[in-house]
Image (cartoon, rainbow, N blue to C red; front, side, top):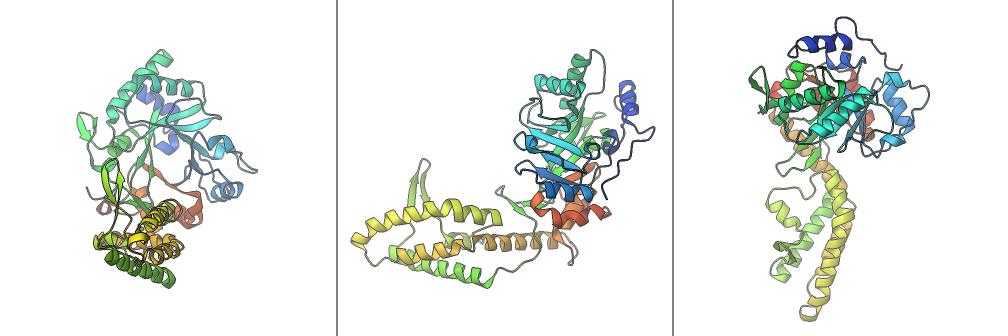
Length: 406
């Protein structure tokens, strides 16, 4: 059945919240879901890089997943199929500009790190003429939300010619068990008290949509997907072992590993042995494995081909050809090895945090993020939609705080 819209009931209505804010700006307005007049599911679909498919839209809608995030590139491709009612969904847009959307939008997330009065005024105009219902902020680093709100108040007064609650009422924030800055860093001030952006948003009734809720961030900034335990295929392990042995033989024959010249100096060519010596997986995730096989490997093979052409004159027995062949065979398994690496990293992190041994890590990660106070929902990719349908029925975790250390 499609999602049911529950009109906000007094006193928690949008009009009531606006009236209260006009008289007492520090009053906590209605909850985010009711302010919009919608019942919004805790799972949101991320269409920022993916063209929305009819079957995905229908599946999401029938399961109550009615928060959908687009980019300026993908929003024009949205064509709602029957029987989806526009009034039963929340369309959000993330953009670096404040240009008028191609169709009405419920939430306009402006991606910026610095408050800008001109941009906020443009967003207030969009809200005033009904092109958008409300707007929010999208940023990677925790912002000083009190500064944003003060500037939004000025923008609202400039547009409406009177004191009126601004349309700034939402956040798009990176949040998972490895990205907790928005939860712990006191970058905002409310009632003369330093608070984190998430607490600031919760106090004012803003809505927070969590990004990266089903991924983990490594120390080097790379995101890897939260993945349930999985063993790498035997053929993949054999291909990796063969490539390692081929590299060892070539390294010994050359008396060291070659480097290439870059603007910043000499850089060692890709080396499986170097990754293993540093206790790192050669491919940290399926995405990095695929990128290596499709983008980096052709350059690696080209470089080794050039070295072989020069090297054969002096050292014709150097085993470069077997090494190249081993890398080519490894490319077929790089994605599977990345999947297994991500699964191992997920297992270690959640085990250290005390997660249940029987937990479905994908669903558990989503449940944790959406159980935090003030978090209205979390983004998932359409490709993983079937994996997250059950999350719509999950109760909030009773105590998510231990999983989000400062």
